[in-house]
Image (cartoon, helix red, strand yellow):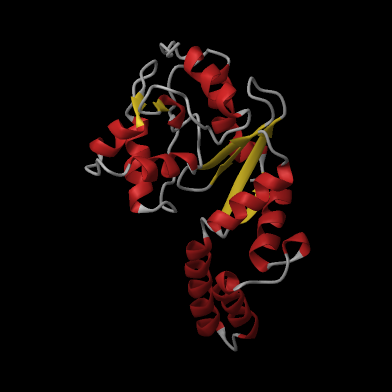
Amino acid sequence: MTPEKMDKELLAWLGDGAHGAPTAKTDTVLMALDAMYVAPGEQATKQAQVKLRRALMAAKGKNVYYGYAPKTRVGPLFVAVNDRGLVALDFGLSEQEFVARVAQRTQATLIRSDEEAAEALQQVEEYLDGQRTKFDLPLDMSMMSEFQRRVLNIALKIPRGKVLTYGDVARAIGKPQASRAVGQALGHNPVPIVIPCHRVLGSDGSLHGYSGGGGIQTKKWLLQLEGATLPQ
């Protein structure tokens, strides 16, 4: 990690600079730092250092790092990652919109770091260019509801070039009457393409909506890229 990145990350933890005032999430770090500064003796200093290390470990993962690919087959593309894996992927929107959307969903500080996001960006670009057929990326699904995780885990299992209907997915999770809810869960997929919600069609085989940039045309293009047989 470069000194500049360390400074930026520390500023984010402390709530300085463009990131605003400290929040409740940073209180433990600030209190531990204060304890070190006012520790009256060697033993107290050591105890304060232990508390600081614990506070920093607890704060780890509060930041989300994002990167940007200005030109891909689906237009400008953004990805965001944390220490658990891929958190978000989006395209067809501005950087400001992406940052605001992910910050609201994760309640985390977003830091621009093409280095941290490099692997995810590379794999997605390779996929869109037809140079990769599957992803090898950890996913952080901890911020999803249990229902959405179940739905998206079914989407993850759909083979490349194959499709299911919303009804198929509803039945697969044991909720045969929940097609509409399945559609909503897929529509709020935070990592489209990597979690291939585009492989789920309407009960009549129609493409229906797609929340990614370009809408249905992008969904159609992704399915054609994967060699899926589409309804006429």
